[in-house]
Image 1 (tube, rainbow, N blue to C red):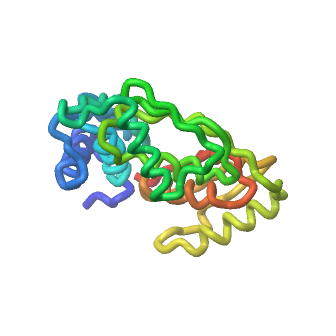
Image 2 (image 1 turned 60 degrees about the horizontal axis):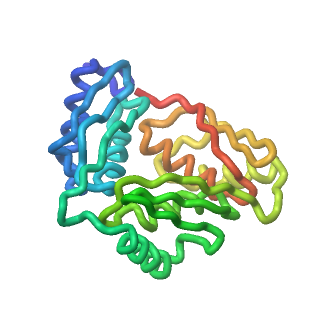
Image 3 (image 1 turned 60 degrees about the vertical axis):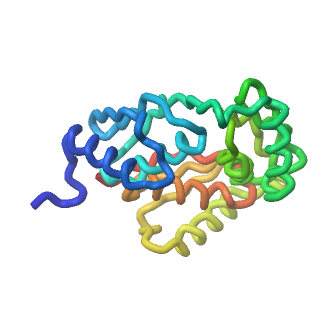
Length: 224
């Protein structure tokens, strides 16, 4: 019997990804094509919303054996979901007010359904919070992140490493001892092993939440 860490074939991985896309009710994968080569999965085709595009990538990241994802999906909005830029901007303003996830220091630009976020935040994880606040809105074709992280107070490398290590140790089902953390002038590098790209994303977010972190570089090996 093959152990979970043994490499599956490209065809098996494609089948597993297609099965995951079909199982996830948040993904409309009818227009999605999947290719796999040595653990790298490429998604092509089209989806009806940016929400589906994001959900498709996250679904693929959950599949064991996937080591990288190339997202070449296009958003082809159905006519009834197309919004004028003014309408989309108003919806974003409403989401901004309702969620409180987009700081006042971040500006929002809308052009032909594409949204660009510009400005600064104090914590690295706030960049992704801003995207999450709007990614499910109807009518978005794409989101460009142009946000810079400018910490309010600089933290020493030792303090950053300690806080991240403590957070990883609190995460269930994670072998924190297998992950090393290095910090230098706000840049964090992670090394070690996780079971999936989805788990890697969780660890990256935990590291990004630490005060003083500007960027997270992940050199971790994903278990197969």
